[in-house]
Image (cartoon, rainbow, N blue to C red; front, side, top):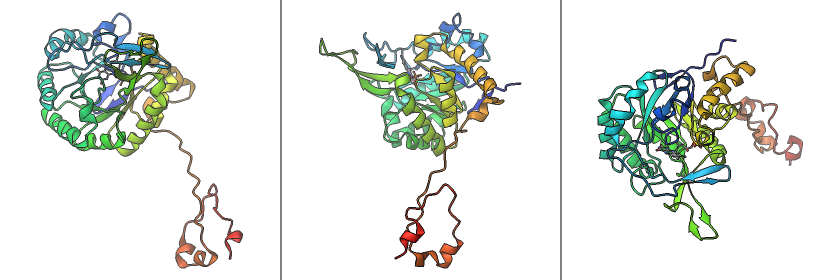
Length: 346
Ligand SMILES: Cc1cc2nc3c(=O)[nH]c(=O)nc-3n(C[C@H](O)[C@H](O)[C@H](O)COP(=O)(O)O)c2cc1C
């Protein structure tokens, strides 16, 4: 069987839907001797800011049951060093699309990074991080407020022709509502989820385990919540959704795609196995072959949701003989009647 693994995301054609997630794959080039970068659909850089950021002091990563908690504090080299040193060697891997994750404390910071990156070549898209839970300003503040998000994405849209992916926070009441705001403001796609705001305490020392006290939870522990959020978001917006959160196996990737994701990102799995992304590309191909799926893209949104069993209205016999009732569609075979007709009779 000839398998077509290509997917189109925000106008970019990816050779397959597997993308390494921001913050878990460095600037990509560090992985060139570990992973065949050409085999990945793409990767997202660590969040890039206008100025270099040192991040929080250690401890900033700890293991938790079925996941990990991090508060890196967006350590990165800054946009100038990224363009000068990190970006050029990536030209050796043209099939692996470079998506630059952008972070700022203010709107002007975000736009400053975009303006500078616009002058550089070899970038397929920007992922605007409005969802980092580990900094005290910027980041999640934009992703948790509709007005701020609309303004930021509107400004970002006006600043670039490159595709804009907005990385959403799960730490909100309605992630699908935030996705709609991002889409209406000009986003070409949304990606979700970033980490869940969380905390861990060492009961012997009575101290928080992270220097930042709180951090972001990722890994398999968050997967079912992330799948639900992707499902709800994909039904709420017409732009593509990139799904992530705890993907370890090919089946996990398929699950996100069935829920509505066009592509998937793989983060924490790379900490346990640095080759996880490439392993997932191969595993997804095998899964498709063994399930007679010829086009990987056909998995997107292909969830088979059972029709809800709708209780029949509890009408009286008299009401059931009105002209409207007579024209009503007959109940589907799987519909249960709330009250059997004979018992509804007075
Ligand atoms: C150590 C670490 C650093 C991260 N840094 C960033 C970042 O700079 N920007 C960003 O948008 N997301 C960042 N993330 C979030 C991941 O990209 C991803 O959204 C999240 O971890 C959920 O996916 P996972 O469960 O597969 O890891 C980071 C995650 C981890 C674990």
